[in-house]
Image 1 (cartoon, rainbow, N blue to C red):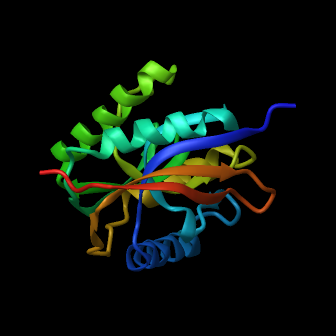
Image 2: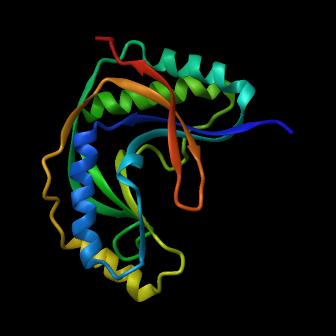
Amino acid sequence: MVEELRLFVALELPADVRSALSGVQERLKRQAPRGAVRWTGPEGIHLTLQFLGDVPAARREAIAAAVTRAASGHGPLNLRAEGLGCFPNNRNPRVVWVGLAGDLEALAALQGSVAAALTPLGFRPDARGFSPHLTLGRVRREASGDEARAVGRLIEGTALDTAARWTADALSLMRSELRPEGARYTCLLAAPLQGS
């Protein structure tokens, strides 16, 4: 049996930003219908640039080399949390997220470099395009329509009360292990963003 790794490329967040976002989650948890949302553990909040899925472990080195190439030529990014929202929308929420502001053009360029480096290895970028966000939680499939709509109204009526800012200085190849208690993430490679 071939060993597979569930992989994605991301920018990780510093502990103080994760802590600030955890505070936002706690406030939302108190107001959301009980059990309607499966909240992301603060240690698992990150900015995904490309999801790769289940990949044979033997391909790890080639992917790591592509991620390192993608990072070269890109400098650190100054980012900040800004705004709350839902995918696909607040009327039918499935994902609760925090938006981003700051060096968004440079972030889009970095994501483009990731996609360009991984395409020759057979990984296609998301057809929906890149929409930078930090996932706070996912509305449970078991949630009723009324509960889901209540979550959407809550997000629509809530202002983000954190000024979380950080400098992203490395591009990470991450492994995701799905467990009953939630996903566990491990950084397999941190490629520094040292370019101009």
